[in-house]
Amino acid sequence: MRSTSRLMTTAAAVMVLAGSANAQELQRIGISVGLLGNPFFVATIAGIEDRAREINPNVEVTSVSADYDLNRQSSQIDSFIAAGMDIIMLNAVDAEAIAPAVARAKAAGVVVAAFDVSAPGADVTVMTDNVDAGRKACQYIVDHLGGTGDVVIINGPQSSSIRDRVQGCQEVFGAHEGINVLSADQNGQGSRDGGLNVMQGLLTRYDNIDAVFAINDPTAIGAQLAARQLGRSEFIITGVDGAPDIEEALRDPNALIKASASQDPYVMAGQALEMAYEFFQGNTPEEDTVLLEPQLITAENLDTYQGWTAVR
Image (cartoon, rainbow, N blue to C red; front, side, top):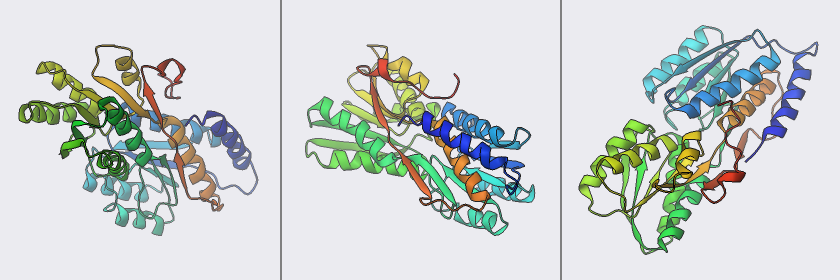
């Protein structure tokens, strides 16, 4: 969903609030993301930093990578608490097990905002409708195959967003008796290298695959690389993110990647920061969770796709 104009309007309102006499000063923000090697998370950090500096140009922002390690992320949250952060911006690596760390932060008076994925107990949450993203990416596969074929799902770390995408995909596949899911539990780690390694194993195991759903674009790119290394080209690949690298792939008629359900990480994370700041000021939102609608990007509509808002 293209939300830039709404973001700018909200940002202006935040600036007014920040300048009011009763506003608490936003001094420190801590950000923990799943994997800084993923350009998606780099864009989320940019969205948070830009919105935060509209509120206070001198705000201190600390960004760290959990590398999809729950213990590391829990320790990062504890460090943020000890450092006196006003707001923790959290991209939780585990959909449930992060709850005790979130509770410790809230007990210490720190506002916790979840972005991209949910986190139990977070004060506010902004994320893509990931069930819908999975549905759209996998409906493309079903339509392409005419409702019949052997498919695989390359799974990932068990954050809520990845679980939701797989759920949406499985709903679509399950509604068509002719779709045979060969594999759905292999963890590609949400990365290019992980997608490469998992796909190499799947290609060795299965002589024929008609389509692959990858839980994000780096995984999809890794899967395509594995196919090229092993000389396989009988299948198509879809993913989720609508990343710049996927735009390039969709422009290549020889690419196996044919579609991606898009997100806008910059807008998403920036909106989460705005909501967190409102909560920091004592203003409880009417809705504490916002879902942004994904758009399916293909070669056919790529020319009208605006891409990620973050500066490339």
